[in-house]
Length: 81
Image (cartoon, rainbow, N blue to C red):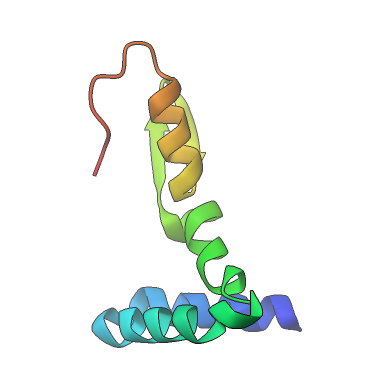
């Protein structure tokens, strides 16, 4: 139930533009004192909501894995947007 709620909330944030960005920022700052802000930003960092990119023939999913895969390339040409 909790997983479905987090998934629905992050999906809402992804598709509702400025309202979603506001909700993300508000909840992130509101939940920092309790440490629960990880529930808000983790899906964006580690799931397909954070993006997918083909790097060296492999599909990498999530903002942080994409960043780490791009840095691991030899030589690093440039980081993607």
